[in-house]
Image (cartoon, rainbow, N blue to C red):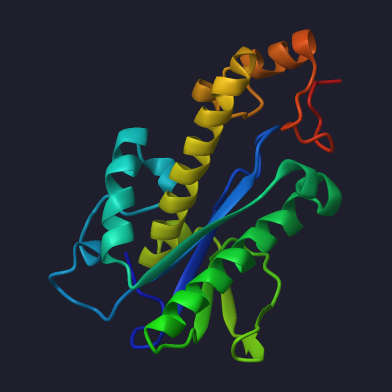
Length: 210
């Protein structure tokens, strides 16, 4: 795994939950510390695209990232907002929310965010309220399998969303969210057909096949 810009304060961003039929989209931003051969984030072979990891591996990496990153934040945008502004805009909004929290944390450390790297090929300019300017960014296709900070963000976003859907699944056990995490699986769609949608479903999505 690589570092995109070494020597500057750079946040890696990714999201989880664009495809599911229910629940929030969750994003994370992670800023790495200065390169340190003793920091486990720089050499852990499991830090990669969260989709390539098992749930057990992701859960083991989550506290490691939280402890050894210079700064990190997680944010979410709920289903009703997704319906209102669409899933792409909601995903980017969640990333912007996470970046704002990271900026606040960095300020407490006497630091300023200088650059942003984002997984994928779509992003809206992030305008820093603190610095009163746009922060430069790069979008990187498959960035979560290339750059440590994006990979770490993907792991935090994925584990957070899984926790959320497991909790919501206790309220609505008929949809089996503990297992399917609200993705459009057969069991999930069968449950929607039988019980109808709940308040956490994204009504702008195609909940049932035509």
